[in-house]
Length: 161
Image 1 (spheres, rainbow, N blue to C red):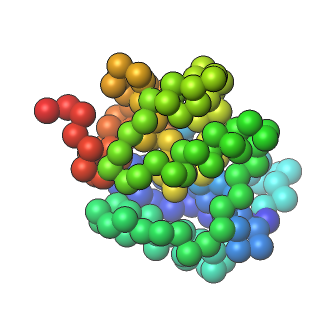
Image 2: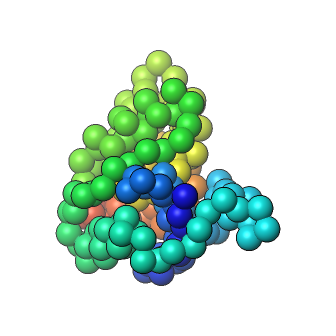
C-alpha cells in the first residue's frame, strides 16, 4: 500500500492506493481524515510520490483544477459498508456542473445518505461536493463549505449570484 501528499489550490491532499487502484484521497485537514492510517510508527503504507498511480491521480487533479472535465484512467476502490459504497456509486454518476439533493440521491434514507456522503474517502473524484440540501443550501462537505463552494463554481455551477 502506498501514499503521498499533493499540493492543490484548496490545500494539501493525501492519496492512498495499492495495485494501481486509488483507495483514498483526502484533504489532510478534513473532518474524517484517517490520520491514524499514516502514523509513521504503525503505518503499513509506503510513501512514494513516484508510484505510477499517483502520477495519474496528480495529473487528474491538475486537469480538474485547470477547468477540464477529466476521466480517471485508474480504478477507484473506496472502502466502506455496502450502503456507503452504493451511495458513492450514485454520487459518481452526478454530472460535472450539476448538483443533487441528499433526498434525491437516496429518497428512502436521505440522512443515512448524508452520513455516507460525509465519509467518502475519495474526495473530488467521487464528487460528494455535488450533493446539496433539498433547499439548495451548501451543507455537509467534509472538506468545508468554502471548498465545496469553490469546487461547484469551478465546475460552472453558480449557486451564489
